[in-house]
Image (cartoon, rainbow, N blue to C red; front, side, top):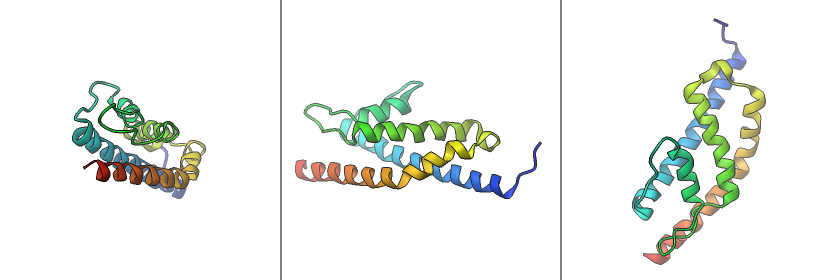
Length: 126
């Protein structure tokens, strides 16, 4: 087994932070699916289906929670989280992590705006 270097520990840390970011967002989406939609996807691909659900309008219930652009970008983080959970650090590549790290601030800003807009819908509707 290869001995870990400082760079390996840095990659591990970044990977776990990206993992935690997506996990937290997914928990928010699960709460929306349970409380507002009253329907959460099941089955093998439920993680992808939940993202799709959040980007879709549910007639007579709610508008989309997030845009399709945000959904597509979050899907990259969902896929990366899967890698972190199932492959772990032995196959982490700085070249694959860098784009996720670089796009995170803009994605987070957009996600914050979209979720705030959804909260305004809930407050106006309730």
